[in-house]
Image (cartoon, rainbow, N blue to C red):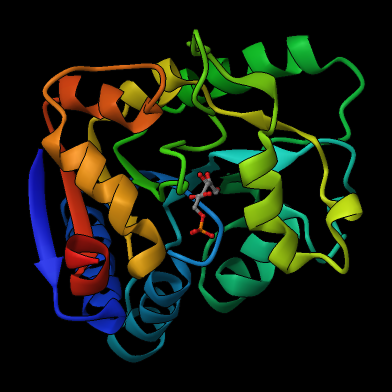
Length: 241
Ligand code: F6R
């Protein structure tokens, strides 16, 4: 696992956006895996700037998002569909038909989850996956547990994740308790992975992750130690605490 420590959040965001830019330069029809949450917001701002000021072209890019809450409408302000539309897709020249986000309101979630993984395969697999990390070590919504799902699945969110995500909702009761998430296997199939973490709140989990020489389902991100091309990009606060 390669580690890049940047001075601050702005530099971290630029470094992540530049990696995406370089991959699009190499492969204009890149298949890009995306995350939501606070961490990638700066990276998305920088991608929008690169598109508007330097002509970064998303017209042939396909995206797959990691996750979505179950039971939430696509146009709900806290849905990840809404987040992606307002944070990135509305501001770049991506074809909406080439953007895929799990549907949290689907009638047959099990069938749908298999279909999501099949669709990723059909598009040639994810070339570059962007990940954040939960304070409890989750990646996507693969929470610490006795066992981890291989494929895309419906999962229960832990209390700590519900608590962390309640900052986006009016009250903690409104935070959905379940989500559809890409599985650990879906993520590990990506050819290249970047994991971003910023701020003091992530210092403990980053310290844990970087000292690991074992994989454990109690720290889902530790599975990334088995992947041949992972870059962890952190700011000084997340690195030093
Ligand atoms: C979001 C996702 C989550 C977040 C993680 C960190 O699509 O998959 O794993 O990356 O919860 O969230 P933030 O960035 O809000 O600290």
